[in-house]
Each structure stands twice: as structure tokens, then as C-alpha cells.
Image 1 (cartoon, each protein chain N blue to C red):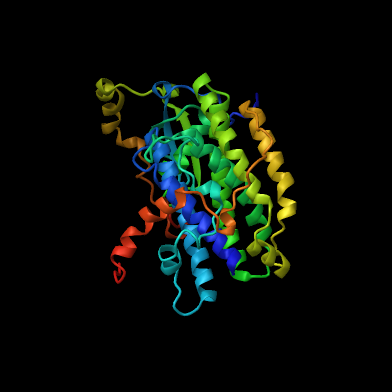
Image 2: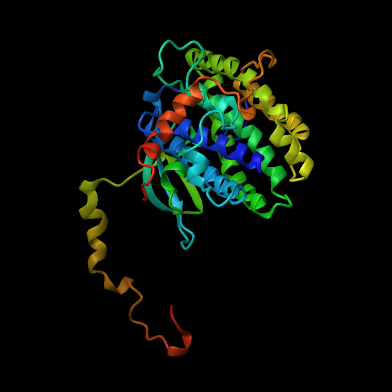
Length: 106
Length: 256
């Protein structure tokens, strides 16, 4: 068996293919953006399918695939306690500095 | 050049075959993957037909070459016109066998990465440009098919049995690759870059490496040698072309 993480693993039946989240970085971009998900039998397969499904129209130059089970997401019910408190703390935004014109865009 | 037509016919027929999976793929993502594969091949066919049409005379166009020639004029390998199932199918519309599709794509792409690599530095500039574009697509097709052959071969008992059956069925058709057709011979004599003899060893090497991982056995290719690239086709090509050409032939003056 190969140690390459992208090497094909023995085939699982279709009903057992796990879900993977796909992140693609575009030519102009600096970060990978989430663009969707797909089912695949293993990591290498997920990468190939992401290439076939999510980069058909030259959307990107780099693909990450992550098993959905590896992602921990915040609960929608916690939205209030997670995100509302930062709404009224405007001192955290760097907007009170006067930037001299010579510095240019920051 | 007749050799360009051979490449074009082969790409078109295999593109047509792979397109038959559209809407019927085993999984949504694989459906799209096969459709992409088919589109790549048809794109290669278009470029090659356009090139051949330049030399075929003022009446010729990519459409006339693709839609208005009969099976006796086509020069694709017999292997690519076969339907997606084993040899003794009782009806014309058998369930498609994914193993047959993937093993065939593997055997074919394995050949074409070698061919395109030889044609990239060709003195014929247009052929070289087509080769430079096609080789990237074909390398991907090879990877995709290799992955599936390994996954099926080293998979469940069912997938292994079907992959082995597909390999047993298709291997004899690969003998055709190595015997130069008249078109290939004159292309080689002309010096476009093709060297059939030099392709076989690397093809065999990749085949062995993949089959090793897939735990499949290739029986030595022996027996009847198909003659598709010499114009001698199986019974399947006429049905395939009947399907593909029927619209164009029903409306010969149509423009898109």
C-alpha cells in the first residue's frame, strides 16, 4: 500500500462515501473560500471530484478538501452570545487614526 | 494528413461513448467527471478535424468530416467504439458497466500521454500546439482512470471481478496500438515526431504499475488483432455513428 495520502483506498460502497467540504482559492485571491461539498470515497478521490465539479469554469488555482466530520461549527442557537457582544464595541475597530496622505492606502 | 484524421476519429468516438454516461453516472460527481472527460475529447477532436479539413480541400470542414463520413471511412481504434459492457451482451442497450468504461479510459489515456508527448516537439506547428493542449487533459484522464482501476481492483469482490472481466475483454484490443497503420507509417516516415515502437515499453510499464496496485492480472494480449485504424470496424461503430450523425444528416442545411 502506498503512503501517499492521495493514493486510492479500497472502494467503499456508494452509501458509505463520506461528505467532504471543498475550499477553492481563485487566481486573484489570497484565501481558500468554501464553495460547496461532495461525496467521495477517499481523500484523493475527493480532490479529483472537486477539480471536476467546482473548477469547471476556471474558478481556482488551488483546492483543499476536508472531511466534513473534521469541521467543528458554531451552533446557530449560540449566535446571540457569540456574535452580538462585539457589535457595540466600536473601539476595537481601527477607525480613529488619521492617516497622512503620504502613507497611502492601509 | 490521414494520421490527423485517425487521431480525430478516435477522440470523437471515445468522446461520444463517454458521453453516454451523462445523466446515468454512478454518483453525481462522477457523472460530471465523465462529462468533462468527454468534452475534453470532443474538444481535441474539433481541433484535429479543423486541422485535417485544411488539408482536405475547400469543401471540407470539421462538421463535414465528423458527420458526413460513414463507418468505412472512420479510422478510430476498435477499442474506443465498443459499448460499455462485455462481449456477449444479449441486447443493444445493456446496462453500462463502469468498470469497462474506466479500464478502457485507462488503456487509452496511457497510450495517448505517450503519443502527445512525442508530438509536442513536432515540426508541424499546429499539431504541436494541439498536442501541448491535449497532453494536459490526457494526463488528468489517465490519473482519473488509474485511480478508478486501482479502487475497483483492490476493492470489493464484485468490483474486482468486474474490473478483471473488463480487462480480460479489452486487452486484446490493445494489440492494435502497436501495428502501424498506413497512415501512421507515412506519418512516421514524414517525420512528424511519432515513434510507435518507442511507446510500447512505457505503456507496458505504467500498465504493470497500475495493475499491481489494483491486484489485477493482464493476460498476455493475443489472438485476433482489431483493425479499426485501418478502417475495419466492429459492428458497434455503425450504431454509434447512426446515433451521432442522425441529426446532422436529417437537417443538412442547418446552422447554429
